[in-house]
Image (cartoon, rainbow, N blue to C red; front, side, top):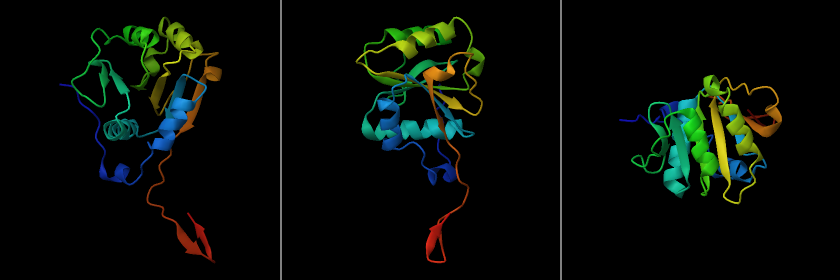
Length: 169
């Protein structure tokens, strides 16, 4: 049974994955996106909620399960457990989709880097986006220009307050 991350109470108050972020990812000129966050499980759980609410095609790759839909847990891509096979599937897929990869750093080596370069250069109408989520995303040399970096730093417990007639955080 595949485990899906769930949102805890502290993350529920800090919604990072919004329709605006989703649109930013979809409209990005880059096909590779890196979201730096210390709360990868919470961010993926928020992507799952967004996929359920909006019906968008969002998938999550895990080493033990392969690519699975975040909308329909039972929908898995057969033969996608290996990172190389998952990236080949994404490269050849004719449909739109956002593919999430958490803690993928150990897989950022050949032949995966070659496939990622192909995905980065792909200009298909379908709009496939590969999104890396984690706290340490170090792209191999020469690939930084192919990736859009987004930072998620949750603000713990700070709420706006009125000071001298101005709202401050």
